[in-house]
Every structure is written in structure tokens, then in C-alpha cells.
Image 1: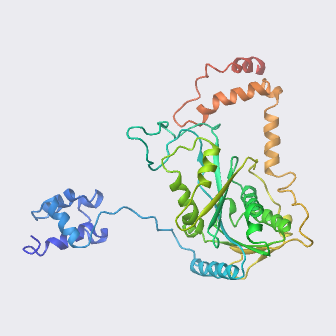
Image 2 (image 1 turned 45 degrees about the vertical axis):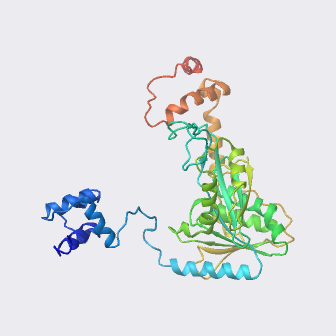
Length: 397
């Protein structure tokens, strides 16, 4: 057909190639480019053609069915490529000297329970794992797992610290500290430096003073000069940990509900690849409150050296003078936002204000919380099961 009508193929390509080559008045511009729709539009333009013939012509001209690919990163930073080259240079220098190079990041927070998990797993036919129908809301009391990963680029090993509280800068550095005590100092017993590659955001953001303050404390403890190189904003997929560690962990627990912290830790630790990746995991039940702050004066006193190349993204925390055996300084300020918030919450929970005992207030919060957080529910009706409500009403009056 195309041989008899030389205008057919150009008309078809004008429909399926970039929009600026198509007819702006064509309804196909705003609909799916299925074979049937393409055939209908060509018929509207005066060509008699069937959907199968459209498919044959597309394949003959190098087209195929394709999905989208996540590659666009928004506006590129002008120093993007220079920073990539600088990171590569730092990695090679540290590896050539036999010093550790680790890639760090927090994996997606996971809620625990019989919740659906993407992927499929081999099971007896007709016997799938039963999970809840809706997982968009599980309430504020649901347990969670926060995997913070450390990937050793040289040894191809992973170490994951699974937290249960908040993904904060203190948690991030504590995860690195635990890796160092469990693996780093054994694998690199004679090193004096550590190179960390990290994203620009998250709990290890280059903007966070607490992140750098905690790294300074870790440098003082270990005697290591800790260098950090951040990937430019919008380029997190280039961080090695994403496709060298986290992708394999996700594949390993596909189609399996994460019902407990034990399941999360053991599944991570069981991750193996044919290329030799080995992973260790541990559970961190510590508390990491949000709102911790570092004053400008304290931050200015840190032994922090900014590199000549983009000092905001590249810097080194030097160990404090001495033998490195002194304990780490306390994190945050004595009267920082986190402490003020806790004090305010304690005052608001005073029985003289609430008219309830602490146990009654806790019970009331547990009953009201689902209605508070659910997007489609209303708080206009009082839960019938809330026995402290009546007590609260009489006492407050």
C-alpha cells in the first residue's frame, strides 16, 4: 500500500513522531496512539488502511511499543558535570590508596504488616499471599522500617541499619558509625581516611548542620578524616548504592509482605547476587527525634575544611586533636527546637488542662487518631468506644 501511495508513510510518521511534526488540529494529538486510532486518523485524512497494516508499517520504520523511562532530571546545575568528574577523581584516589569509599542513602520507608508489595513470587497455584485491600492508610501507630544503607564500592558489600523511629541526620551518621564498628575498621584496619558519596538531599543533605556536626563527632571518635562528596541536586540515580544495593534488596523481597522488623532485616541480609554482592543488616531500635538544631557558633567551630572545588558539596571533617578516644559531644543545643517541642507537648498533656489521666489521654489519642489522619473521614461524630470522652467533658467544664 505504501508503494502505491507515497504520502502514506510520511502522514503516519507525522502522527507518531514528536508532536511538533503532527497536525495540531488532529484529535490523535490528545489520545492514545493505538493502531486503531492511528488507522482512524489516517482514514480521516483520506487514506484507506487497517490497524494491522499500520502496525506493519510502524515496525518497518523502526518503531516498537515502549513505556516511559525516568531520565529527565529537570534543570541541570551548571557545575553538574564538573562535580561528577571531581567525585570520580576522589574515588579513584582513595581506592588507589587502599582507603574505604562508601555510598550512602536511605531506602524508601516501609510500613509493616500484611500490606501489598510490588512484584510476584513463586507459590502453589491458586494460593497467593493474602494482604489487605487498601494500604493508603494504616494509622499513626503502624510500625515502620527505615533502611539506611552503606555500600562499599571497592569490596562490593552492603551494610544496612534498619531504624524504627525517624530518618534524621543523627540516624544517618549513627548508621555509618555502626558500619564502621562492624565492618569498616576490620576491612580497613590501617586507614586514616574515609570517603562518603551521598545525595544532595535527605537526612544526609549537604545543607544540614547536624549532619556535618555528627560527622565531626564520628571523625573525633575514629581518628578518621572523613571526606564527603555530594551528587548534584536531581542526580540521585547516579549514586552507586541505588543500583548496586537497593535495587537488589527490592528484588529480593518482591511480592512478599513485610510483616515484621525481623522479616525486613533477614530479607535484606539474605540478598545475594551473581556478581558477589553480600549484605549485612541490623535493627536499630534507638530514638532519633526531629527538630535537633546546631547553632551558627557551634557549627563555625567544627573542624570542617571546604574543598576548593564547590565547597558546599565537597568537604572534609578532620579528627579533633588528641588520640581520638574522647566521647562524642552531645548532639543539638540544650534548648533547641526538639527540646522546646517536647516541653510544650508535656505541658499540653497536663491533667489539669486535659481533665484526664495520662492513661486516659493516651487511650483517647489512639481512638481519635485514625479519624484524624484518614482523608475521607470526619471528626464531627464522637467515637462510641471512647470512654474517657465523657470524663473529659465533665472535668473540663
